[in-house]
Image (cartoon, rainbow, N blue to C red; front, side):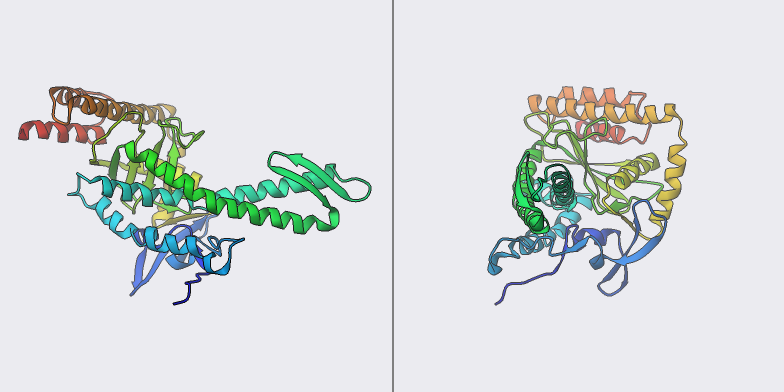
Length: 369
């Protein structure tokens, strides 16, 4: 049987996009999408967005191995994600095995590392370096010699396009090779982190062509391996995944499930747009809704924004402390229940805040023991 040779290759899989799509006829799924920075919203089939010709086709490899990476993604990630999605959005699923947790982190984090923004950034760097070298380091005979970081350039101007194209091919090969290693290492690193699935009320979530948000408490990303980073990923129009900081040795395999209000969704959608490469994507009507909400969001007072930030930071601190207590004393201990009572009385949390619901769930365990 011949090797499967897919030309149009998705960096955000169809199996992920379907959760935001409308099925207009059997097996034809359509999302609404808007170019970043533009106003026109279009209906696009999920098979026709977040795909680039030959993105994962391995250059510098013989024909029999050129499509190894794309075929791997199709089978081991895109084919597995539907089962992971069902597990994440099942409200009855709270306890997960190590194998299930590994699948959750492995598949969802692939959506970060396989996006083309990394190689596109590298291509822009190559263009800038070559243009600078040509402008500033060309001698009277048209020869260019320039050393800059990993680039040791030595060519004649007649070879400019050929040498630059070769550098781009090589960098693309390195990206395809190295991003898999980075993704595997990062997935193992986040096995120490806690997981929540949050359901929003009062509005809808959108996603993008770069849907995974990784940031510290200030909203910055200086190092993806910083143990204090938090990860968020929209799963559909109502649910999103949180993978918490992992600055402790062990966290039990529990999916915390909570609800959050419209403000949380508007904030996440704002991050989604900022994080996108070129497309915002959502269910019917959600992109227009997002645009209107962002206008209202920008008019919020500084006091409102500070209150939201303070509650979010306190929530992260409480999650860390809960897990430290649980790691030291076990999942059912008086100190766990004392911490839950403290959370219930925290004025930063409204009555429907996710940490209040976590606290009630913990205290319910006390009642059942």
